[in-house]
Image (cartoon, rainbow, N blue to C red):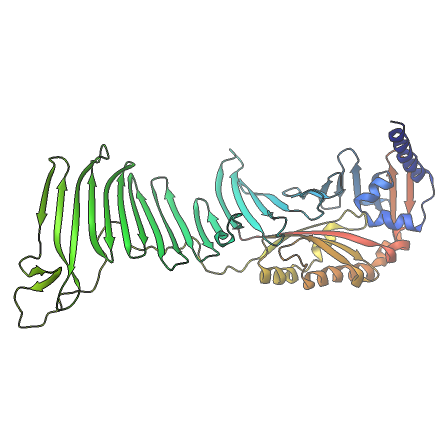
Length: 481
């Protein structure tokens, strides 16, 4: 308990000392650079930038909530940090950014954007769900009504890992209920959803032994058609109101058996079994016998539809009468004309490449950074070119820009490839060089500090500009979602 009290006393004493001592060059460089740690270490409550008595920018720090509110001449930006001084919220009035971190990581694994758009609020989320695979990115967009909070539309792009079998990892694109999936083993599946009573789905998979498996379903009102093919076998099912009405089994495009059920109870009513034999002259299989079993009257009926043309001899069909013309009795194989056997290849998402454009919000926790000025001098074409190449959904770039030597600047943040594009760095450095060239603008400027215990300090920032590293935050998102 004594140790805790001593630590608290030491911390309070340190803050008191900072508030009482005369600040030296090193102190002012830190304060003007404006990291969140500086506001805490120097017990700052408010910092103001004056030009001939006029307040150009003011930053207020709330130590209880770890929040910075930067009021410029034409804008306001609010930052909120967590206990580890990691950025968790940035508020640009109509646009809000939220960050979440996994454990003690400094890089966010979840990046959310909210913005108002007419009567809707759109939320875009970039997340990195697998800590051991940091390059796997999930992206999701949800639009809600501002009036009632109802979801109007949603879409997402994800790469999902199967923990049991990596071959079943898959990439998924989703639009509302529609989705398309492509698995690492070559399998595909998709759903085209029109309504609860109208949709169709497809899935295809070739097994390691070469056998192809495919499944197709189509629902129209209360009728469901399900077709499953395994190798050369095809199984067709027809349901109505959830009850199986009919089942058909085919092999190599030949109908082998049919099952008809009571549409009210689902009880089996009758079956048809078809038997084929090879024809002697051409070798093809011909339907020879159909066995009909009626479970209502317990009767069985056998018919021979091709008995007039052929006779069966040692499991071989022989023509009863030769024709003068050699007719090819074996037409090209065709699939049975049954409901739902058509192969669908509809794509849930268009392959048309849309050229993206990006929208930017720029802020800084430094009193010397004019957010409005930064936006006006920011070459978004440079960023658009970089982001278009990598197709970035959202990004957050934090720059520590050295005004005297921009080549020493460092950059970090949330970005799809993990590497901040060089031309983006180049443009931010260009801004810093322009600030350096016009530093004479600051000769009449004064910075005033008010501490939490209402002590005041002042300086002329022009004296320290060559030593300052300016924090600049660039938040961006694609504008075509």
